[in-house]
Figure 1 (cartoon, helix red, strand yellow):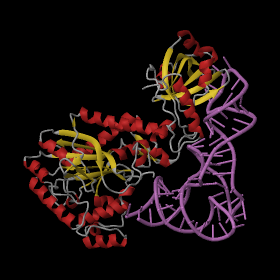
Figure 2 (tube, rainbow, N blue to C red; figure 1 turned 180 degrees about the vertical axis):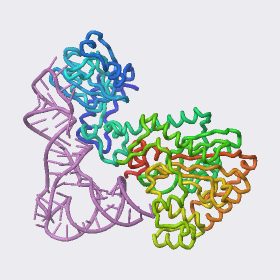
Figure 3 (cartoon, rainbow, N blue to C red; figure 1 turned 90 degrees about the vertical axis):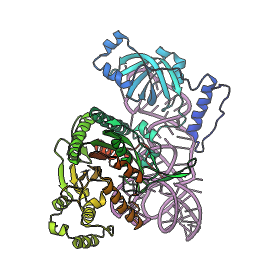
Figure 4 (cartoon, rainbow, N blue to C red; figure 1 turned 45 degrees about the vertical axis):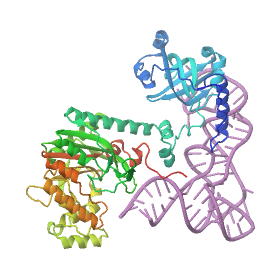
Length: 504
RNA sequence: GGGUCGUUAGCUCAGCUGGUAGAGCAGCGGACUCUUAAUCCGUAGGUCGUCGGUUCAAAUCCGACACGGCCCA
């Protein structure tokens, strides 16, 4: 603000020679005026210029005399005595600058020679093509807009240190094109999902992130406390129970894209906070959801990648092909034909089998729960092609509608792609008395030591008692979907600031 | 939580079976008016993650801890 208030060197703890030299340059800059000007406004983006003038030869450009104003971070610099080249990078891409004594005068060029990689420049000039045909700006006006005190990572290799990529994502974004691409694609995916639902008459809503009773999923919550209300609150593990209350309220098609929080382990597939799409539509069922999901994934891939064929970790998945649909036991038998239907329906056999495989199972598990445990262990990771697993047991699906023919199972599916769960959807349980009974079962499981079992939510039961129309609802893990569409092996590669331990 | 690999200059990396550290880029000084990872000459820069142990001597061997990658739970 005040030029006179010269911020006399406030060194950082990790001050080194390079930073000290740049700090001296900044001190000199302050003496000559405002070192952080805010009155330069650009007119052009690098990639727009490349596109717009792609067909123009140097002769054309020299005749037209197109004046442009661009700004960005200097990422390459080549000084040759009386003339220099530099490359600046803006959010769209890069463009080369040509600076010479002839055009700016010797003083400006001389000052430029002391600018550092990483500095933010604003320039005005005219377009031309170099001998090699590269579109460049012949600079007539040059300004240093922001001095960078810290040096950039190595210009050729970029930043490769994984930890630093996560902790200082801005450096990863500056130096690695692929990182920029991944997050641009992520933005595109979310945008096209929004468009997909809005086009179908859905309302986008936001429901609470802080819940008095954590519900809607089997997971441990983060706990916090509201001082003024003096009450415990939990970061939400799922928005499901609120969204269905909205359907009770007459919002017959709703969706929400927002964060969920689960207080569990961290891995290449799990971040404590992650982004979830949930959507609900009245007067539909789970079969409709499966069709809708296939359509949506095709549309999103087509829009974002311009193809339905995606490459993931060296293998190809074609979203245009119909997705397979298997029950849990069908899937087990497809990949492990040594099991018979009779064995998979035999509780004693399943328990014995799980024990010999060294897999823990919940003590009260019925046949369906045991089948699912076996499936999770031996089959899930093999489902590379998009596959719907259908008819989940009621005992592990406390919010899903019972199947009309077999009340032990529910009208529910999960979608697996590349060996990972991507989506979970079902016809909603809208019978308030059955829901109350299921909550009671969950409470018993919780008392028996199941930390992930659900709470009894009387508020939700009351809403159901006003009447939830027959409804279908689904959740899709956005981060995992982004992993698929950007060929990223770890969830940390698609979350800008993944959770890490504190540095010190 | 377990296994495994890693942590050396601002960044990318060397450093064999122990003898107190090297390169490239970035920086600084110089040369150079079409370079593009510019080039050429010169120069500066390091509590080798932390703490402890073995040893005449530790970046190197041993142990603990911290942080991270990958695999498993």
